[in-house]
Image (spheres, rainbow, N blue to C red):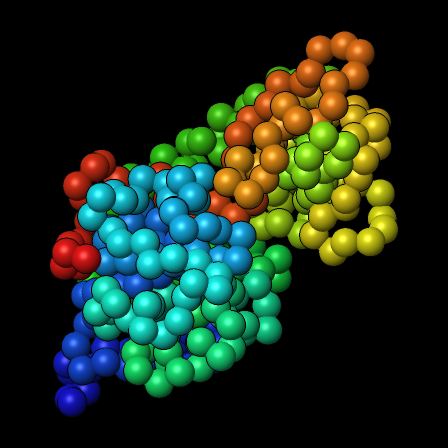
Length: 284
């Protein structure tokens, strides 16, 4: 292994992964895989978390070509052999703090790292959304992705459009509530300061409603009446497969506020490239 040919990447645990050549077969946590695809790297496989089932959750997969990317499962269904079934030479995972590999038990993660390099990127509230995106872009570049001209310009333009809308409605800005429905009588209401992507909205001037202090670091679990007592005018609703449909929350008098579908853990890259773009990583 020579200094010139060796691939190296230091992850957010402070651990350095090395390989004799640049990895080409990447297995990734589902949203990390979707982000890498947006950045020009096609994973050979993806895996989910305990929230996921036997099929990939399309609220998380973005524009990933699922016909070309294997889904190896999630939660208790995952073991080392199943994770290695696609022949990866690199595993990309995420952490929500403390270096814990999200979606894998320590009993699975440790022996996995003994057999293949594992890169873990921190996507917790300790970082800004931009910082998270920068780390994924750094990893993608190390794997051979090339810069996408205009990606930053497109993102900047989208932010400017939002600033303009907020400025035009500054005297009567709509109250935006982010939540994950939990059935007919309950919702998990997001604390915006704890979510990097929601902090982007607040920094741009969007009035994202903050629930009252209480139990729950990231979410405040509220009854249906408590949720709508926050007077939302726009709802950002969780559409992941394990979340209840918003329609299940019991109605009250008056029309329901507009809703915008979304996922609490979005992809962390720029807008997706055109279909077919990206560095091929081999067939799954």
